[in-house]
Image (cartoon, rainbow, N blue to C red; front, side):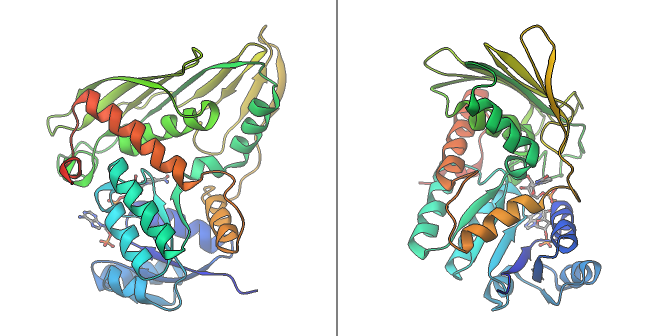
Length: 327
Ligand SMILES: NC(=O)c1ccc[n+]([C@@H]2O[C@H](COP(=O)([O-])OP(=O)(O)OC[C@H]3O[C@@H](n4cnc5c(N)ncnc54)[C@H](OP(=O)(O)O)[C@@H]3O)[C@@H](O)[C@H]2O)c1
């Protein structure tokens, strides 16, 4: 069976990283599209891609493209996902899925109406150590799970025009980095019943650092932090009545995880070998779903619900995007 053709929409940093993994792992990368033909041609030459398009419209219309990978800033995810869906293509949308939950629901509704598969590129979910963590958590190895601790903190460009600082491009720590601990907490504990957040903002009005507590009716908690101008441990822990898991730096990428008993004795340590950066696992799941498999790791309604958590965090910390005003 021939594999589906991937179309890369945008030529920025993560588009390069993801495409490198696809090519190295033998996926079919059929085309790339950029706002500038020159950029598309350079990208195609760098990765050995047969077709280069000077607009996103041309990319999604290319008959050799079955799956579009959207790698634009957060502000443009919904628009570009909808563009691909309207062309009848399946879509992998970079995290955070959209700017708002309303946009996320709009994309999910359009995908359902068009009968195409859409998935958020929360690549961490699909990594082998996360699969083992879910097995241990759901298999009862930790007893009753009570707490998740996680941070995603990096020292990133402070240029006010950079997408991370710019509210018009969906800037701030939360959507770029904070999405990882939030998505991890939801993976382990499910959706919270209550969210509390505090933040310090940048001069440009996006969150520089944000602390979050997700709470559950039965008393479980996730304590999460994110920041874009200070690099921290980037570790995570899952704590239960019969033991705890420590996920070493950097928890959201391939790394070592240890299961301890309540006395701190090692029960199991695992560090699955991962080729490349590890972005191929999400692509494998999307291809399986395109071939008819049911979602196993990140159903679209969970991505939509997570955007609701991020909306509530932003409401509490006072970070507003233009999309918040959309009807
Ligand atoms: N999974 C991960 O590990 C990971 C890591 C980093 C980022 N990301 C996510 O990937 C997305 C892109 O991040 P990035 O770091 O790759 O960003 P980036 O380097 O700034 O690239 C973004 C690309 O989007 C396109 N674009 C379209 N409209 C734009 C606009 N108005 N302003 C700027 N660029 C525009 C541009 O491509 P053309 O010029 O070719 O049109 C640009 O190169 C974000 O959602 C981010 O959260 C994921």
